[in-house]
Image 1: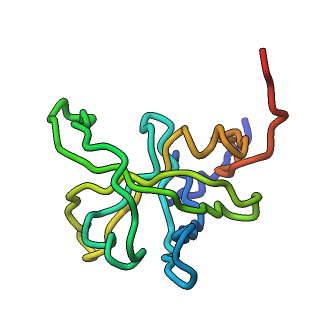
Image 2 (image 1 turned 30 degrees about the vertical axis):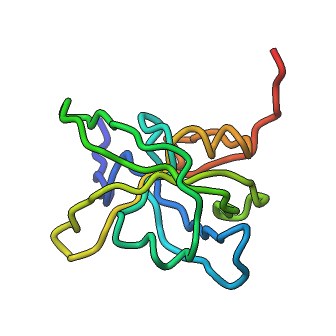
Length: 139
């Protein structure tokens, strides 16, 4: 039998993409970051400490978010924003801000949930760790 060597894979099972969010009503107010694709999350979720960078946004709803741990935490949905995910077309949407703790490197890990992905529409290719364009459906 032949032998083979396993190549270590960093962050196996994770997909990160570049995202830019712009205030749809205030030119020049935007933020760019790298987000973790999380299809178990609903919204594009950012740390509350970034909210001021987008300027004046309208609060659309206050929500209680259930975390993966089962913990309930408050959040606020704001809009309107323009969202640019990787090399896909811009979409109009909303963003959820909530209190987040930075990781061990002192950086925040924004989450890209399924609502913005469905708006593109984009699929998740876990084998190649990427997003891909899918056909829109009205079924």
